[in-house]
Amino acid sequence: MKTFETVTGIGKPSAHAAEARGRSRKPDAAMFEDDGAIPNNPRLPFILYRGAVDLSNCSDPAAVFEELFRSNGWGDSWRNGIYGFVHYHSSAHEVLGIARGWAKVRFGGDHGKVYDLSAGDVVVLPAGTGHQSLSASKDLLVVGAYPAGAKYDECRASLQERARALQSIPKVPLPQMDPVYGAGGPLLEAWAH
Figure 1 (cartoon, rainbow, N blue to C red):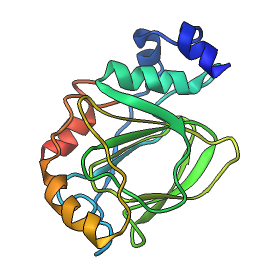
Figure 2: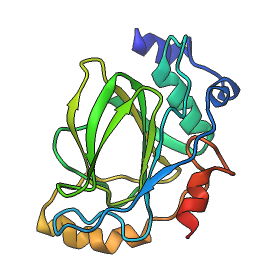
Figure 3: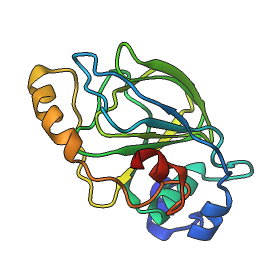
C-alpha cells in the first residue's frame, strides 16, 4: 500500500496542509559533552520540540512529516525506527519526527540523556550527536530527513571514524530553515549563537 501511495501521491498532504498541523512550541535544548567515543557537537545544541505536529485524524502521519520537512528544505527522507546501537552522523544534521508510537532514546552517547518521545515530537540533531533507541513500541514509525545538499554518513564509536568526525563536524553548514517552522523557526536562533 505504501508503494502505491508513494507512486501515485494518494494520501500525501499538501505543503500547506502539513504546515497547518504544526503547533508553536518552544525548543528544549541540550548540549552533550564529547565522551571520548561519541564526539557530539561542541557548539550546536540538540533541539526537542514536544508535540510539535498534530497527528490526530491523520491517515498517514509519516507523510505529514515528509511533506513538512521537504517544504522547509529538509529532504532525503526515510521511514523506519531508531537503531538500537549508538551512532551519529559526522557530515550532516538530522531531524527525526515521531509519526507513530513511542520510544525511549538516549542522545549524546553512553553518558548522554534519555528522552521519552511520542507521536508528534520532533528532534533536531546537530552533526556528531549520538543517538540510540533503548526501547520502543512495536508500532514506532520515525521519519528522518537532512538539510538540502547534505550527504550523511553513519558513524559508530570507532577511533578511526572519530578522528575523521572531529574534522568534519565543524565544517557542516547550518541549515537554511527550521525543519518544522521554516525560515523564522527557533532552530535558527538557537544555532546562531
